[in-house]
Image 1 (cartoon, one colour):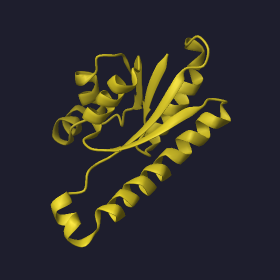
Image 2 (cartoon, one colour):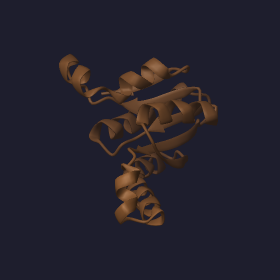
Image 3 (cartoon, one colour):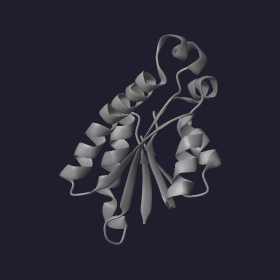
Image 4 (tube, helix red, strand yellow):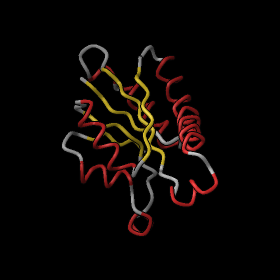
Length: 141
């Protein structure tokens, strides 16, 4: 079983990592875990006037690695290997696309647990993933 584990550095996403660790016995053998961080894109037109594309790529990579590090640490402590992935784009769309590209049978992620009004106003990555995904989604709060 291949699992896409999406993290954003929040407490909710670390709870998703813990949730997967706690329920890993649900899967026969150790699942193949793909750990994904999606960085929201910087408005390129404005950024490229002041920053080179190489500098922007370096920023995305360094920030992504910093976000992935705690999740990788938790997985390693639990004896689970994970392949890290860093992408730039709209998080929900990239999460679903990467799950399809990697052949994952499950998407695991955190939910911030906002109320209905806040979700309606701010939107919800988890809600969008649920709407777009063609595989089961495990949400941890």
